[in-house]
Image 1: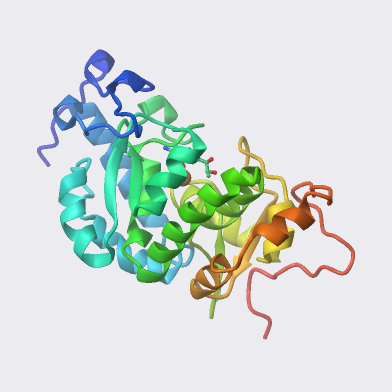
Image 2: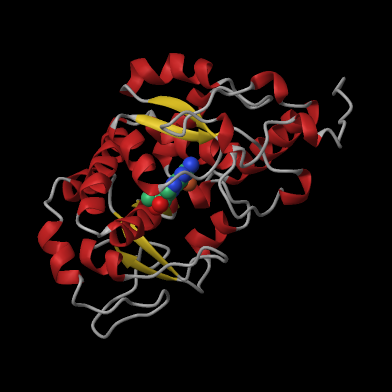
Length: 288
Ligand code: HBI
Ligand code: FE
């Protein structure tokens, strides 16, 4: 096979996690590609192979169709190499960031069709679970659908909406929409529910859970209901919201959210996992 030996313990040479002194005023930084160790590339390869093997029957067909455009299953990709395909496809480009960045800066980059990608990769001890986004989550989870024209437009509309929400003091409501669509969204296909959210698509354990476990609640995506619903960041979701096709995201993103924010300010939040009277859960398989 001729696979290079994996050398661990070179952490001081990898792109430092959380070193924001590397970043410009818009929080972007260059991808210090030479700093990735062979162990980092091995981690990428292992995550990519494991996750790809889980996609059939669980990931949305659009995601599966777009994934090859990422073009890097063996080694961590160069952002510029992905950009050479992404820019002509949908006008998006990837920019490096040292990790999570402030909300408004995040929204601003999206509104400019620039997608922030964390440039460091998790350690082998974090293969199954990591609290913050790393390069695997950002690239494998998010970037394939940036090649899809509808999702690409939704992401930009979301960023522009985020800047408005910030002025109106409503970023928490809009963040829930991001969470339940871009991160944990499900889509109905002819043979059952599939994942299009990056948080699910980059997770080995939540992918099957989200589309087939009888435990979580699944509801049709509805702006008001979704924005009222709290979410968990430390466990599998208790509620997923389901769309019928990606165009639905763009359709509601074109609405003026200001009246909605005003109305929601007077309504209590809903705990994840709560089915309200009159609501009907979406089944995992189409009824025949
Ligand atoms: N920063 N790098 C990065 N990646 C994110 O996904 C991200 C962020 N900052 C803020 C943020 N997400 C959230 O507030 C979104 O919910 C809007
Ligand atoms: Fe994410």
